Image 1 (tube, helix red, strand yellow):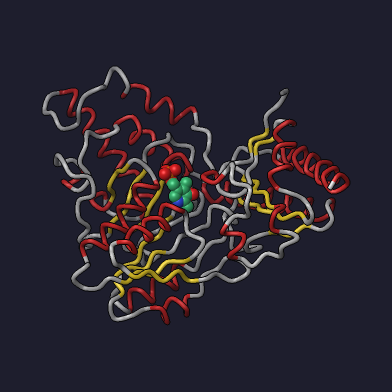
Image 2 (cartoon, helix red, strand yellow):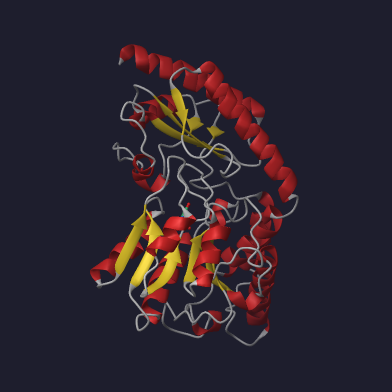
Length: 382
Ligand SMILES: *Cc1c(COP(=O)(O)O)cnc(C)c1O
């Protein structure tokens, strides 16, 4: 394979050099346990608190509202199961939607087995949840609404402000899985009425295995991992110091010149979409044309199998995906594409191409050219 074109930034991103450099001292020289009192421990503790401040700043939150976790999956599990457990005496009904990440969907399924009721709202043809349907789904025993900020497969950005307002007016807690959105678009908790928000470092050029949960002051979330007194006693276990430092650095960098980067990325994304439509017949764009994450594109090509196209692209050094990274190997149509009501002749031919701030126009040109040739090839042979 000569050159690699990485267009799967929704699955994970490459850690930046600056992030790696920021983490490095915490593997060996500064190896202390943050819970100890001497210099090594103080060093680690200080580094953790600096990362907490950096992240809080990006959200316009308080440092005491940021809790470090092992990633997006843990943050989602903690938010959904934690709130469900703590508020059981007030009710046992949750509202979510049918295109959430499995970290939320399977947490909800787990709660259903414990006797909770969960409403899975449908989405429209663009992947949007209707705030009005959220309002109508609210019952006297509803305790939590959880709707993702941006979808990981089709990139649709949900009406988080409107849904948050509704939840707030009904005094129901609102969680958003912002794993795809945090670090990609500006999110302020002063603007968005959210009570809990999940994020993960490896989706914004930070390290894998570390994330955070924002919990608004006053929300009584119970401890999720029981043990020592780390993270205000709510998330026990010796902290992943290098990971937390790396995430803090990645968060800082992601929010530096964010506007410029977003504009550039949206331009390149639109260029990709327009080029695909111009050069390849019988194609559909999945998700919303404008209300979508800056780097996300997701297409359906009529009459082909997305999985076959991905194999041919891989042979040319192009990394893309069929939908979500968690479901590769499954050849059936993704539940997200199904939820959008995509026609049967188009749905199997789904591929997702997700850009990063580093993706170049030349890479996009090469990728579209390869897609064009291979779609034609598959259509001829099919
Ligand atoms: C990646 C992702 C997750 C899981 O995060 P991890 O840190 O990989 O566990 C959860 N939700 C969404 C929307 C994601 O894209």
